[in-house]
Amino acid sequence: MCIEIKPEENGIRCYANPETWPPIVCQFKLLFSDFIVEELSLEGVVSLWPLEKDEESEEVVVIDNKCEETCKSDSNCEEVCEVDMSNIPKGLTTENVELMLKLIDGQKVLVNTSNLEKDERTAIHNFVKSLPKKNLTSVTKDGEIIISVGNQNNRKRFHWDNDTPDYCHFTLSKENKDTSYAVREIATKCGLNVKLFSFSGNKDRRGVTSQKVAAYRVKIEKLMKVSKSIKNIRLHDFEYKNHALGLGDNIGNRFQIILRDVGDNLTLSDIKARCEGTDKYGFLNYFGHQRFGTLGINTAEIGRLILKKDYQGAIDQILSSKKDMSRETFQEALFSYANDKDAKKAFSLIKGNGKKHSIEGNLLKALIDKNGNCHNALFSLPRETISLYIHAFQSYVFNEVISQRIEKYGPTLLEGDIDGDGKVLGSESTIFDISIPLVSSEMNIPNNDTKEIIESMLKKYEVTCDDFKSLSKHVMVSKISRKMFKKLDNPILCDIIKYSDERSILQRELINGPDVASGDKYTAIKLIFNLEAGGYATMLLREILRFNVDKETQKSMNKIN
Image (cartoon, rainbow, N blue to C red):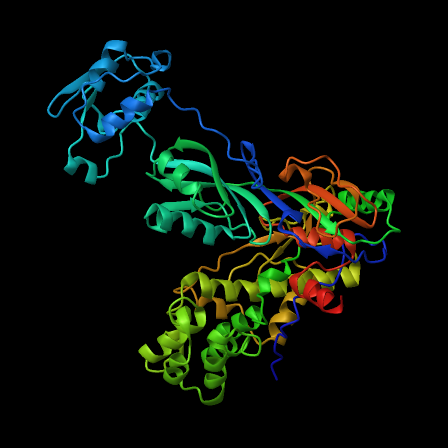
C-alpha cells in the first residue's frame, strides 16, 4: 500500500557539522529590517538604497522658471530661455541651442554626428529632453540628429531612439513586497505590460531587499517618476543596456540578518565557534521549508499524485489543503467542493477577486469548462504551477537522501560518489564535490548506497522514473544534480548586539543612525554572509543555530509568547 507524504515532512533533520550544540532559540524577521538581502551580480553587490532615507536630489539643468512657464503655455515661444551653456554636450554649439529654443512648427536643427561616439549622441538626445522647450523631439538619421517641434500625432506615437540601448536596467530596493508583486506595481503605474520587465530571481517579501531589474524600452524619466508614487519601493542606479535579465544572471546574494532575543548567556565566542565550524563543514544543501508550500498546502504530495496520474487526488489536495485555515474568500467554497465535488457550486461561493486571481478559483473554473475532466483541468493551470508541484516532490526525495546518508555515514565521501557531471570522484575530492541527482527519467546516479536510498524512496511512494517522461509535454524535468554540501566562499561575520527597545531597528545603516542601538535588556546576533544562487539562507541559519527559523516554527513561538 502506498504511503502519503505528510504535510510536515520535508526530509530536513540532520546537520553537516557533527558537533552537538544546544539550540539557540530566537526571533527571526520580527521586523522587515532584520532581513536585508542584496543581490550579487558579476559586477559586485547590488547596493540597497535604504528606504528610510530622504530622496537624493537629482542634478538638473539650470533654467529660468519664468521662461519655462511661458514655453508650457505657448508651443511656439520664441524667447531664448536661460540654459547653463557649460553643460552643452560635445557636438552641440551655443548657436544650436539658441536655434532649438526658437524652433517653430516645420523648422529643424541639424547636428552632424559623423565624428561622435554612441554615448556622445545619446548625451545630445538627453540634453534636448532637458531643455525648457518641452515639445522638442530628436531623431538620429543618415549621420545627423534632427531636432524639431513635435506635433500632436508625434507625441501620441511612441519613439525609441536608435542610439539608446533597448533595456533600462535599474536597482529595485523594496520592503514587505516580493519581487513579482513589486514589478507588477511598477508596470501598472507605468501603464505597461509586466512582460516588458525581467529580473534574475524572486526576493522574499518579509525583508528589505535590492536587485537588478531590466525594462524593455522604458525611459529612465518614467521610472523615476513612478518610483516616487509607490510605497516601500525605490528605483535607482539607472543605466541603458542591450540585454534583458534572466535566471543565472546573478551569482548569489549578500545577507545581513538579525536574530533577536537569543538570551543573556550567549557570548560572541560561542557564535564565532559555530560560524567557524560552518566555515569548515559548510551546511547541508537542503531545499528549504518554503520549497514545500505554506498554509498547509502539501506541494510534495500533490507532485507525487500528479506523477502517479491520480489527477482527482491532486485536485482534492489543492482544493482541500487550506480549507481549515483559508480566508473567508475561499473557506465556504473549499468545504463545499470537499463535500460533493460540485465545481460549479463551489466556484459560485468564492468571494471577491478570488475567482480570477487564485489557483483555487482558476482550477474550479477549469473543471467547469473541461466538463469535470480532471487531467485537462489540472494541466490548464500555468506551467510554472505544475512545475512547482513536481519540483517539490523531487526536493523532498533529495532531502531524504541527504538525511539518510548523514544518519548512516556522517559527513564523508562514499566510494562511487559522483560530481555534477556524473564523473566518479577521485581520492583528492572532498565532501563539497559530492552531487546528488534530483529524481527524473534521466539522471546520473552513483553506484553506492545513495542509489539504494533513491530506489527505496521511489518504491515507497510508488513512483517510477518513467512517470516523469509522461510529463514532458507539460513541464520540463531535465537531468539535474545538486551539491550535497554547501561551502561559503568567505567567512561568516558575526556580532552580538544589546538593546532595550524590543522593536529597535538594529540594522542602523537603514536609518542613518548611530552604529549601535543603546541598552542591555535584550540580546541579538547579527550575521553577514554571501550565499551562491540556489542556496537557502534558512538552512545555513539552521546549521549555526540548531534551531529552525521557518515560518511555522516562528508562528508556534508567537503563540507560546
